[in-house]
Amino acid sequence: MKKVLYPFEINRPVYRETYVYAVKFARNLGAELIMLNAFELNLYDSITQQDYDQLIKENWLKAYNEIIKFNKLYLQNHVKTGPEISLKFNYRFIHGNLLNEIRKILSTEEIELIILPVPDHKDKNQRKLELIRKEIFNKNLGSILAVPCRTSFQPVKNIAFIIDLENLDHSLLYLKDVLRYAKIFNANIHFLYLSQSEKAQIISDNDAYRAVMQIIDSNKNHVFRQICGKDTAGMVDQYTEKNGIQILLLVRHHHHFFNLALHYSICDEMTLKSKIPLLILRERN
Image (tube, rainbow, N blue to C red; front, side, top):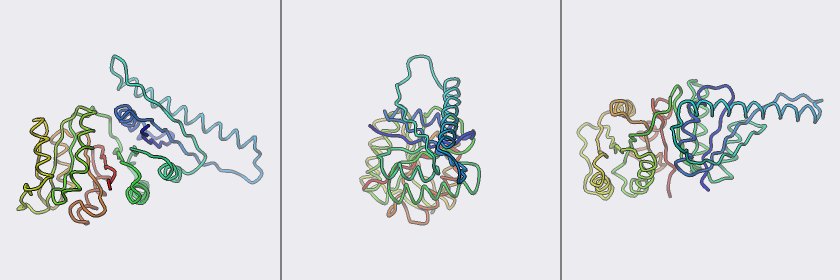
């Protein structure tokens, strides 16, 4: 069964709205949702097993109570009349460091998607970005949904995909993924081709471009747009806001995706600055 990993912390409002995304994605993907809470304890040398067990129990209860708050928010604001798709939960409440426990799960289990809120805190942002770079992208362990702080869940009606027409195989590998996410949310796709030069010509004589045009021909609600200029991240942000995009998809590829400088700029900047959730697709070999 597919798995979606949702690490969460206690008494952090950023995790409550992000939980809604975790539930929606897990349900639509038909995946098991792993709810991970890791807690650190201040242990003293003379602690007894009984006292240690009591501390563990107290922290487990805190995690369960936090999930009750998550579900209350979800039931009040996001459940429609009629039956909801069933969802399998897997609760992991662990004595340990949250980032370390995320690493362990990613290295030992096949995780399709990791839901990560991006806190409105510089130091925590940098640590989370470092985790994304080293543990998820470099080891190719799963796709990521990065949800900005203060984001409220919006029904997914439009998604945008940043496409690289210079690398044919690269783009073609991910079109099925983009179509799959569009299908499960019944969303329109905006294919965005970025160039730092305003005089750049669209590379239309290749398989990737033709494949995109075929997708658009089969569904006129999908569109292709070219965005030119130096501030690519800023322009993408403006486009998504103007066109009512709920989720932005891109791929962080080690060898392709424009040139390395632009590649890093888009992924890192958008991960930290995007105003909408950013779905960064797992690299395919």
